[in-house]
Amino acid sequence: NKLNQLITHIKSEGMYCEIVTNGMLIRKRVKDWPELKMVDSFSVSLDGNKYSHDKIRGKDNFEKVVDGIMCLIENKLPVRMHGAFSHEAFDQKAKPHEFMANLSNEFNIPFNIATYCSNPMKTNEDEENKKSFRNGQTLYNDLLVWKKSGVPVSTTIEVLEKGIKWFDKTNQYIIYGDESKIPNGHKKCMAGITNCFIDSDGKMYICIPNWGKGIDVYEHGVKKAYEYMVNK
Image 1: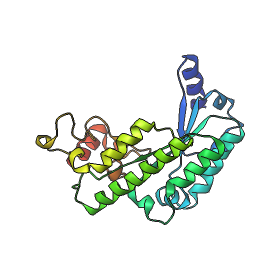
Image 2 (image 1 turned 180 degrees about the horizontal axis):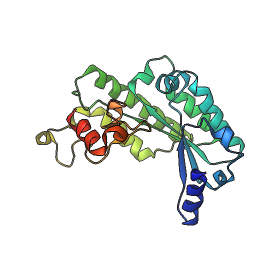
Image 3 (image 1 turned 180 degrees about the vertical axis):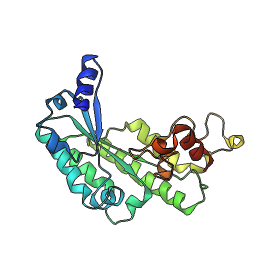
């Protein structure tokens, strides 16, 4: 198995080894792959509660992921949860991140959440972006309260406090493309310049708001996929 070989090699070099996984196959693999005991951390993707997670990942995916997390806990393997939220995750009465906080607190497993705050292809006055900023501020405020109360939130208090201030001053801090408007001490959005995403299906895209909108690097090559991404 190539994954087992990779884990063994990484640890033989004295490096830290983390597996980022959707958690769905953990229970099937944990007994057959003893090398998993060598892994320093399993980062399991859990996007909130059942509503928000299944809306992103597909119907009935939530239960399989939670079962994978429980399997890691049962086998005393180091696990952390990582969620990726868009504003659609908040289209419900319950807060999607509250489930993660409760699970984290109950089993003492760390968690953090990445949330995109805006769509850089639209202005800060766009209603979708305004909604994202409001939800982002709610999320960070809740994470800060939980962190201070002892819930093992991975994000530091300093970062959460800065994030809350950042959400308060969106028009000053979000700059995309027009460098003449950048305040002293700040940089424009570097999405697509210093980083981008390539999914397992090969699609390259500039940032989370454009998830799945790129073209396939396997079919078209990296250069064409990149040119399509930055010119789209």
